[in-house]
Every structure is written in structure tokens, then in C-alpha cells.
Length: 151
Image (cartoon, rainbow, N blue to C red; front, side, top):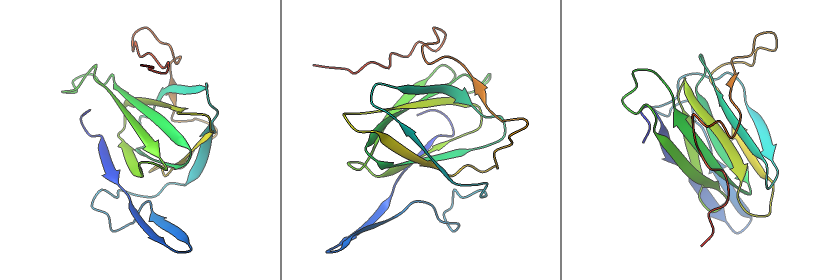
């Protein structure tokens, strides 16, 4: 696991009417602060990657469909420099991925449905000077293959 990354199984409370899923609580031991909350979607066959933040920690929960979330550590001096982690999350596996400052991340839909991810970052989005530092999804320095692994 990349240094600083955390994966939390989420509490799902089902009953005869449906279910309730707690995503993030201010009394969680990993809670830092609240910046904002937003939802982002990705269509099947599309990759949203790569970027990292210098200020904010992200908290990803896939609330619709299934998503493959991939993290890559390019932080100089990190004990896990060069390591890549992948997680498949969504309706079949309700988890939160906590992505620390400096870790590249991206995601794609798994299967035939659009995937929707709720992110609860620690910082507000700054429209004038966004805290986003990007590389192309197929960056050879990262070397991650986003294609579906059949077989």
C-alpha cells in the first residue's frame, strides 16, 4: 500500500425500504477537515487521470456503478516511491479511498455503466489557482495500463 493511503470499508445499513450508507463522519479518527463535497462521473471506456494535489487530501466513494481507482506515488523521499495501487469500488464493494497529498490518482468506470464518485476533499476548490497538477493518462513515466484485463 502506498504510504499514507487508507482504505475504509463503509457502514451500510440495509432494511426493507432500501439502505443508508455512512460515507464520512467528523468523529472518524482520520477526519482532518471539510473543504467541500462534489460528485464526478466517468463514462465506460473513459479514463480520468492523472493528477495530484499539493494541499488537499481526497476522500473517494463510488456511489453509482463501479470504478477502478488507481494511485501512483511519485513523491520524492517516499518509502513507496514508484508504487501503484488499484482499487475497484462501488455498489459491490462500498469503500472510501483516502488519497494523501502528492499522490497521483485517476479512475475509470468498470463495466457497462457510468461510475459516479463523491469526493470530500479537505480544501475548497480555488478557481483562480487550482491545486491540480496533471499528467496524461498514458504517461510512460507512470507506465500504467488502463485497459480491461480479460482472461
